[in-house]
Amino acid sequence: MFSIDILKVFTQPAYYSAKAVVPFLCFATILQSGYFIVAIGIGLTKKAQHTVWITFIACFTNIALNFLLTPAYGALGASFSLMISYGLVFILTLIMSQKHYPIPYSFNKVLIVFIPTAIIIGVTYYYDLKIFPRIVIAAVFIILSSAYFYNNYKESDEFKLVINKIKKIKSFSFKQTEQTKLEI
Image (cartoon, rainbow, N blue to C red; front, side, top):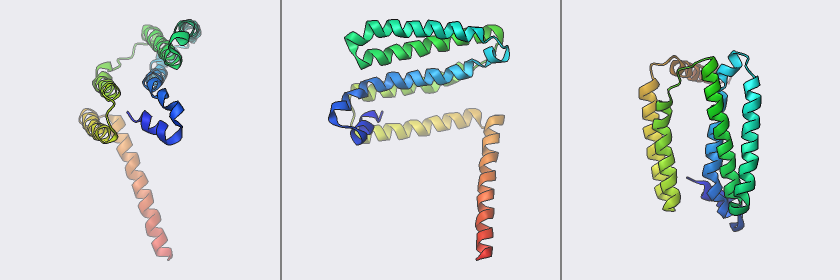
């Protein structure tokens, strides 16, 4: 949502058109990160040979799409090609990983946050909203997403672990402050 603003701060007007590739590169990064999560089954079952052929398929797909899309669409075609390749790695890895070591992922919970995110980004790009409305939309989205995650995960072991770690950090910081005051 703020890619144009970031480009305006760090680059010159000649680079502002790079705003168009940001959604594709961001989604490619999300897919790459998702790969590390869904590849757990392949790792646990020591079936790394699947990673090799999946990587080759994605590599050749990326090269072919770059030959097709980059001449016509430039950086936009290249970023789209990268996103498709990472998507292919994610899907093929998920299929093979689930085949060898099924893990019940809650993709619905991810989609509940991801779909509104994609819609918001699409709307802000399409309508070229000014900075203030984008800040308001981002703040509302962050608040609603935080409420969603809190309501759905507050009883989970992971959430409790994070809260305990935060409490330990605060406790440690408080002890350091008290010790410093005593020394003075």
